Length: 463
Image (cartoon, rainbow, N blue to C red):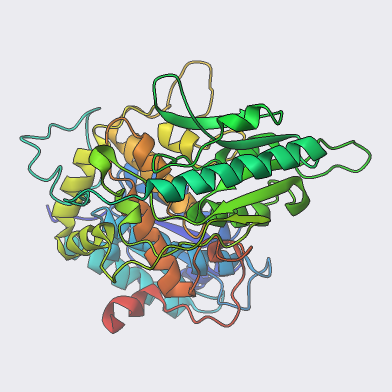
């Protein structure tokens, strides 16, 4: 018996679903193995829904909506046009053939166009054969870890020469400014760094001028302290007295996170006093620069109230180790990419350390951790773990500032940076947007503003 793919089509009720009816009324042939699902708008087809569709065994997913400018909800198809190409790139990066996911536009009167697109898509998916996306069983048997480390970014081979005198001067300046702010009552407390009793640098909360003497600045100040702002600051509410502003010590990459949090109304600018530090990088084990710092030339914070330190000289131009590994993965076959990522996701224990360390993971209830009392569907199987990591990477698209705290916090050493930077590359290429450089939202949550979105059917042909 010839192979017939299982295809799910999400059709906009106002245009493409009616277009399918028009094709039927005109007795135009369309594939019988496409299961149509009627949705209010193409903008309601979330990335999570697409990934779950593949998890449940679909060989292809077709999404059809109204033409741009004809949406019944004005801009719903704008959301689909912006985010689904990004999702397609992410899933292809993880090992899914990009031809298995297609977005296109069909109006109510275009029955012939619907039949043609459906037939073309079914033929393409049939030629690819059965999808290998779904993994049966709770765990993957990785033999020898052949691909486990092949694409993982490597740290620098030589220790970096940090200048202790520079850090000592910045430490004195931080303490002086902290005492001034606390003594004057300008802020309620200060979030900074201190050295704990075991000699490890950790976050610190100073509430009095005396406690400010604990604050330090050294090469081990790796934590992104803006994580605490979203949990402790909330937008001002009329009629309710607000607490005093909070001061926070930030590195250049951390300052970009503040711009993203301000855009998302996690707090107001007046609620935060930003102590920005110039930065030459943070230290990894063995005195080496962290991978994220090896090619970072963002030495000055993009937003601050107080600036401490002189900007270090720029680094010599060098391709990021993460970018190198992304390029290698892109050159690999879909099967090799899938093998690599499955071997990584297989080690995930769903501890959510990545989510807790990330300042952008600020939803009150995470989509991937729903309490249903019986802990059913919490995500311990391979397909659910993959959906969690890919879904989280998508949620950070256009929002991730590259602080890489999620990867550093991961106890299983999963190279999460390869996902986040890939998404950052896609967003910058498609929309010219870098997260946090200005207080601007992620492009995939805004409407089109003159961009031309190449249809999926043409993108592969045009390269």
